[in-house]
Image 1: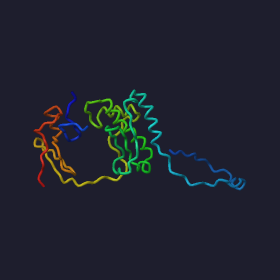
Image 2: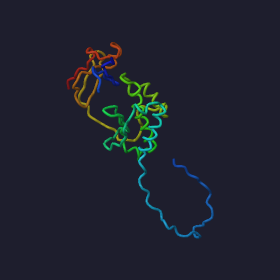
Image 3: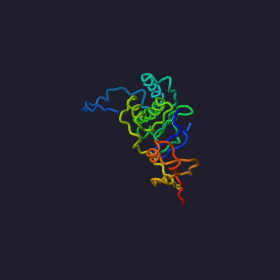
Image 4: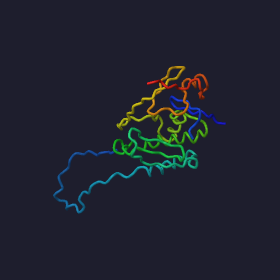
Length: 215
């Protein structure tokens, strides 16, 4: 039976949650006077085509090469509500990838890289099955390499708006003193991940449950 505890970077939970190139040359003679007028004057340039359909098609090829095409059926879309996040992946209820549309204006080349970054999460999750893995652990790094982006960073450095939130709710580990700050109060038992790993094999332990710090 799979371990029923779930962990992120700080918490241990008792139950898992279901170019443009240019050719510069020396100027030649002016021949514009000998040319007839252009019957089709320059038209306004329209918006760049959506890169997602091509990326999804390429993803199908890469997943097939990895033997995962039948195991990963996902959707990808733009999410205009995203601000500081470049992209994110969801495993359930249906696998999907969401990308920040600001990427197209800020760094068009990053659209593809963010897409593969998020797809690597789905690949790592599919390979792991019921085993718990770190979000950006070795399984994810291997998936990045298999998808053609070895050495991918866990976080981006793009000029997206930074999310700032007041975190008024504070909790402290009774064992090591680790302080946890949250925007919303914690509604269920969570314990210090570092202490759970050190003393209980990474499984939830009530001894290290975060305690509310009075304001």
